Image (cartoon, rainbow, N blue to C red; front, side, top):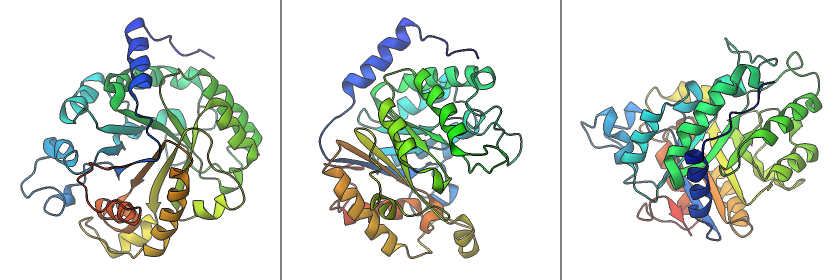
Amino acid sequence: MEGLRRPDSCFNMLVSKMRQESPADCGRLIFGTSSWSEKSWVGSFYPKGSKAGEYLGLYAEQFGSVEADVTYYRVPDKKLVEGWQRRTPESFVLSAKFPRSIVHAGDGPRPDAKKVLNLDYCGEDLNRFLESMSLLGNKCGPMVLQFPYFNRSAFTEPGAFFDLLADFLAQLPKGFRYAVELRNKAWIKPELLDMLREHEIALVLVDLLYMPHPADLQKSIDLLTTDFTYCRLIGDRKAVDKLTKSFDKIVLDQSERLERWAGLLESYLARVPQVFAYANNHYAGHGPATIRELARRLGLESTDAGGVKE
């Protein structure tokens, strides 16, 4: 297996600067939405007449962080990331997903278990991804390894995947922050969490149709694995798509689940310096409204703080 290309001296300086300048204030909630490119937000979230090239700058006027979804579908080139850097203020935090070629690797909907995390296939994409993301400097938030559901034809038992994951995590360069999202609910177990703690990597807490609510999981096992946690409110895509074709307003009441999230995050804010939280349009119909409601339940009444609660 070909290892990662060693970063050059400039790259090393950038990731070192990121670690030194990353905020470490106790109890800091950093929140926003999953992506910023939704056209139906124009008129409800973005001003009428807004152009796609203006979205990120306008978004950054209302929230202090975002999760980039585009990086899952293609490796961002340096020009794209430099544009993100220019369009956002110094305090902005941009989290991102690892490319699909690394965490899924299949040509169709099914993942290719022989290629997932295999540096012989994805090593070059991984190098290009990390080098591009390093251009954000201290604006670079956690980077998420979002894995699909793996059936038994992919991995006959979780230990085989855990071994693969442990080897991959050990080779990732220091200086960045990483988070791992699994969609096999039976795999959220002490063996996985101990591995993540060893590598100082966060478990992604995900609110997804077929996954247990993180508040339920936390009752039986401690989900914190490093000095931050990362939360994704995804929801039920099919249920929301039946209710709307436009994502400009709330169409599904998620008040009860949001209240549970608020209680869980309040407890985490007392234990770790940073909590990241991002809402998807498919959670309730309008990502910005969902994440604002969660923030309100945690004591942040407006967006004046730029998407950060301390």
